[in-house]
Length: 77
Image (tube, rainbow, N blue to C red; front, side, top):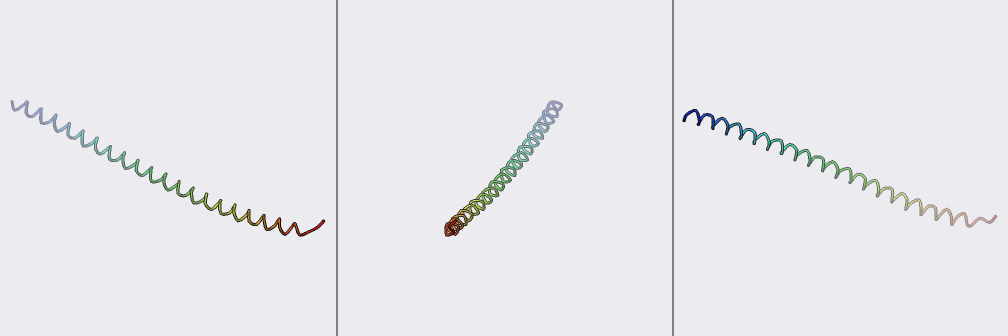
């Protein structure tokens, strides 16, 4: 009976250790996934900022072109 208890105890200990290892691996994978998601969000924010800057530059260029056309129209050929 003592052998059965010892064998069962070792088996249970191995199973618990396997479960702990699996939980640790899941926690690590979850952490990496969260880190990846954060990186993607930062890159999206960077793209958004750059896009807004480009839109502002286009608006200024358009305004400058309008003024240039107005000034050019004053000249007669």
